[in-house]
Image (cartoon, rainbow, N blue to C red; front, side):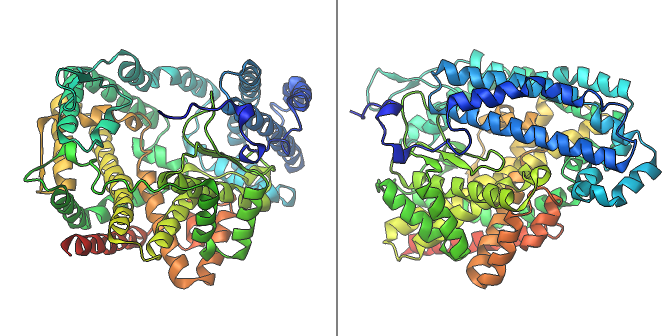
Length: 601
């Protein structure tokens, strides 16, 4: 019988994060929050005045970023207090109140970008070269970049007003799948006459079951329900894509994708290069599928076999002390300063370690502006938990170094690069474990974990990205989407990406309708570019040593002071070239070859 979860008060303090550097107590938070009551009044005199002079705009920016730095601090503390135990009325109230204050302030300052962009070009150019605005030059450049796509105040208000409507398809999809769907229960092979409940939340767990009969039954039942709503999902997704196309046309972008990528100043060629390069290396995926079929001992490999564990869990158990030591060993190639900072973070209770009653599940890293980052996790002693600690410490170190080097206006970073540091750390951990001459079973387990990362994050996300692009292109050109078209398109992409060893069951055609990320258009490709960048960086760190480490740590310190592509290039990854993705694929080839050789022994 599993141990009952402890109450938070019963966990030793050294395993709980320390929030006192942010606010000494809830009472101190309340006092600081009370001071924000009149923050909105600070901005009342500014509408209509931002073009007065460069000095006046500097004054506004100083106030703006100082104000929101305080709000971020308040919000971060409240969010973490709520995560500790979601049953707490006090923490729930804190989180709710600070969110409302955030909404109020954002509404008050919504005039800023439209007002700046309405200024004459000569005024904007003079501001860009003004010495007093030098600390905000990139902020201003980034704002001006959208001038050609910013409409009049009235038009912007109209677009904002129907924003809730254009977001409705994704909300409806969530409600349909999370709240309304029911699935037929499946037979329990181990208990004749009994059944296993199938839900949206346990489907993937059942697809990872060692029992093939359970996997197949879950697969058939799950997609039976999705097939029964195929036309509904088609209508929802087509409406979502049409909404993107409409806004893109109104904002004078050539396509929905161009509009989406413009937010981070990413050239569309990066997206196309990713897809083209992955296509070039699809034979590697076919080899992996063939290896999977061989290791599972199957005459036919079906889609309900692609998540099945190839190597039984080693059931290795790690204490938190052992996990910390593995983390420190893994990041040793990043240099003494990096290691010492991690040690300092572990000593100073950056990590909230164990699960407790009411605690948020999963894991995350959060930074509250100039205070140190914190990590929430639910450590149970598995290798996956060790990897999670490394992953989240990668995020935390990215945040820490950015906060150390950048002022408030640049002390964050975009999603496009957010997963790079975390994945670098994960890769360094696997490389460290592999370097320890593990036994055959352990080595095969580690190699498979590595390969699954490539399969799920580069190949699968690129396949999703290709599906999105084709669907959006069809709507952008004035055509329509139908269930038959999308089902066939998705089935053909599965066949293309997984190769001839996979038997294509009819149910595969409906998988596109269960992917919620498709309602956040042109989002998933960033997983693939981020993972590829992390592989390239970790390879350089291990092979080149100090020069690569220096560039990498500088990359982690840049925050949003430069565009994402420029930040990565500074670190040694140029995504304007196919080389980073190609190098990642070559790495996959080497890992796959090692696994094939082990299986052949």
